[in-house]
Amino acid sequence: MTAAHIDRVNTVLGPIAPEELGFVAIHEHIGYGMPGSELDTQWWKTPEQRYEETVPKLRTFHENTLPWGGATFVDATGICNGRDIDYYQSLSAKTGVHIVASTGFVGGDTALAFFERASVDYLYRQFVHEITVGIGRTGGKAGIIKVGVSRGFKMKELDLRIYRAAARAALETGVPIFTHLAVDAEPAVEIFAEEGLPLHRVLFGHADDGVSQGKVRDRWIAEQGGRIGFDTFGYDLELPDPPFWGRPRQERLEHFLGYLRDGLTDSVLASADANCSPLGWPGVKGHTINYLFDTLFPALRDNGVDDATINRIFVELPADFLTLQPQN
Amino acid sequence: MTATTVNTVLGPVSGAELGIVAVRETLLSVLPGAQYGYDIDIDRARVFRAIAEKLNAFRAAGGGTVVDAGGMFAGRDVPLYEAVSRATGVHIVASSGQMEEGMLGGYFLTPQTNPPTPWPTAKFAALYAAEVTEGMVVPRVERRGAAGLISTATTPDGMTATDESQLRGCARAALDTGVALALRAGNDPMAELAVAVEEQLAADRVAVSNVGESAADIAAAGAFVVFTDVHAAVAFAYDGNATRTLLATGGAALTFGHEAAPASYAGLIEAVPAELRHQLLVANPAALLAAKEA
Picture 1 (cartoon, rainbow over the protein chains, first blue to last red):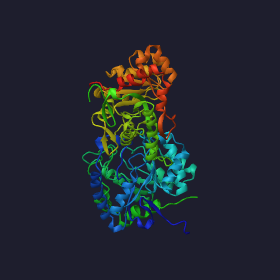
Picture 2 (picture 1 turned 45 degrees about the vertical axis):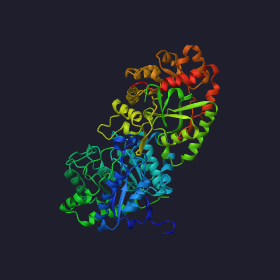
Picture 3 (picture 1 turned 90 degrees about the horizontal axis):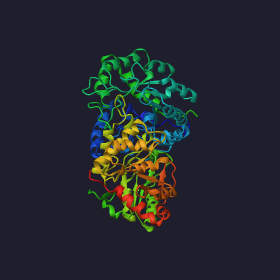
Picture 4 (picture 1 turned 135 degrees about the horizontal axis):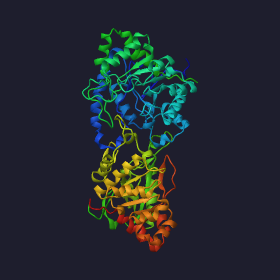
């Protein structure tokens, strides 16, 4: 290993060694809102409220992760969705939780007009800049690239443009790609193949959500080498007011356990996709990142999943995935 | 607000105090999303100075008021407009509303509902009316000042269903609050004006730009026609339409993320024949902008 190539993960407070990540919640949000929601005062919260809703959840997360050492929160909020890097920097500095931020877009339908008109090359340069130079004037660098499928379960032209730009930026900078939704994956797999990006650098997210079932070919994606995101744990239909993407708790768990039973542990990553303090929507009452510790882990242990497997999914695999791996 | 006042960013003023008005302008024009572009540096000091220089020149040429008709999501910066208005002595009227469908954020087009139905008229109406009655939003921070105009546009290729929903909402907000509506037409100005009128907004509360060949029809319907070509405006005014004619530069003081001609507000004054100046640059804008009892 040369001095120029030291394994590192970009967090909002600077690069850290993968060994420092500890427990990783791979797909979460400090606060997510659709672009334009900032214009509607019905969702506004004072800074006091935002910290008050967020800090205790991060503190509890930190306490829950103590057995693993570090605590890492990957924020999968894209450009234009209320991504707020200097706020994340403050949260990370004050709570001790590592926060990894995104460049990219949750989907073409969250990219505003300026980016909707942008070429693949411009989008690629946007992503590379945010990964290697920083986001806005914050100095914080993105550690992942978010891409996704627009509403309607079918890739749109702008989605494809973003995927291609992301593939090029991922190859050059070594950050991994996260997809919002794992539906209509064939065009995505084709683009990544054309660009030469190995599929183990891509997490096909939300493969476990309720609305995707029957539309997602997750085993096929895994066979191609892609990683499968069981990252909406906790959006259970058993909640008092579940979201439309919710799913029966046991059904999601069985879906996940199927991978572990079939020896496909290394194909999965898992998280809760919770908002600490949602922007532009009410959020889902009762759902936080800490569902992983309060509900998921007891359920996994009840089903005979050992600590080594949990460690594999929440520590080793994400550390490998988040480590910058430039291909050139 | 009374029947003759106009909302400026520094508070209501009498319509008679507006003086010479540049009536459908854009001060700071940011293509939505450009503020996040990695190579776009919106230097507020530079923005302030660029706008102030144009407003100072306008004032020196006899100008009194500039109307920023860019709406709430294309660069509008209320605190900056307040400061530049104080510094230059030029009244600034800022607008609510948003432009055509392609300029809207996903919050309005694909909300987090199943299915993701675009916003209905009533929600657009409430969002924009509140900017007049409660103050304009500085996103997620505060409300400041009252909007003095509702401004919208329709897609150049033709009004979409969302454009129509938004246009109706803008017309209702104008009707409910008494401020005027600025509409940048798409490809059928008369049909688009008719949408606003169907919402019970009087045609004389609407200023339509980008009218193409429809100028005479728009004026005959009672609305104002906004020209960006001085010669066309003057000819139209002399053709019996002087009370329906408005003039704009068609440019912007400063743009980010897209190109627009640099605006010269002082140039507007010089370009209009002296005998038409009062009608086109004072009386007509005051008639449009003076709020009607809601």
